[in-house]
Length: 83
Image 1 (cartoon, one colour):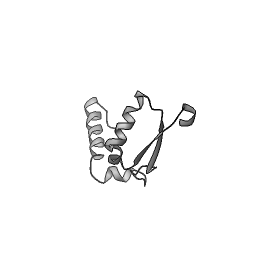
Image 2 (spheres, helix red, strand yellow; image 1 turned 180 degrees about the horizontal axis):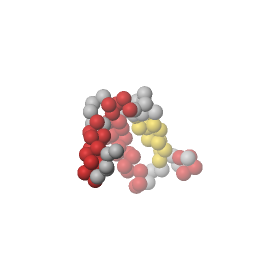
Image 3 (cartoon, one colour; image 1 turned 90 degrees about the vertical axis):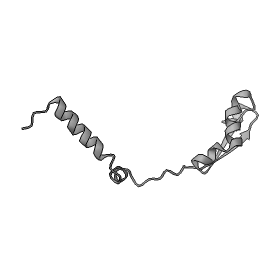
């Protein structure tokens, strides 16, 4: 029977962790999924106040294209309409 010392445990952990970095082994562990977004067009309602500025700038500058979807801001009159 092998006596587990701290050194042996760390060596075994490093070996197990290193095998995950080998190309092909990590991808085989993932389920057959995709990095594609669930929705290609996301409609986001907002009330035209100052706190909607990040949303407006993100849509205007095209930050959504980096992640593969289209952001469609929709100006609404009340929170009930946004909901």
